[in-house]
Image 1 (cartoon, rainbow, N blue to C red):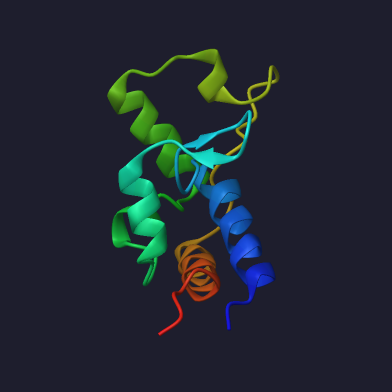
Image 2: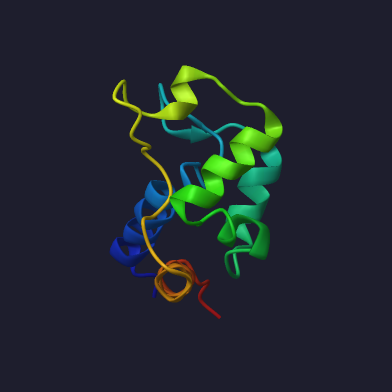
Length: 109
């Protein structure tokens, strides 16, 4: 039996510190956009490493954006310069957050 509450919590828990959505969703009707995402969700086993490593320290995200040359105001967060994604945490806490997200989003075997 699938615990939908744990999965929903896992999705929110992933989106907040990573700053990205788990799947591309049409916000007007909450449907998945791509067929690939639909197939992946139907065959879900676990969160892949690429997505899991989107959960990072806030300063790591800032450094990545600087390397990529992103100065987009929407990516910067709030007008006061504070960031909206990433965690203010040390490596141990980041790994604990990843473990919690991985646990909440594991597939049912």
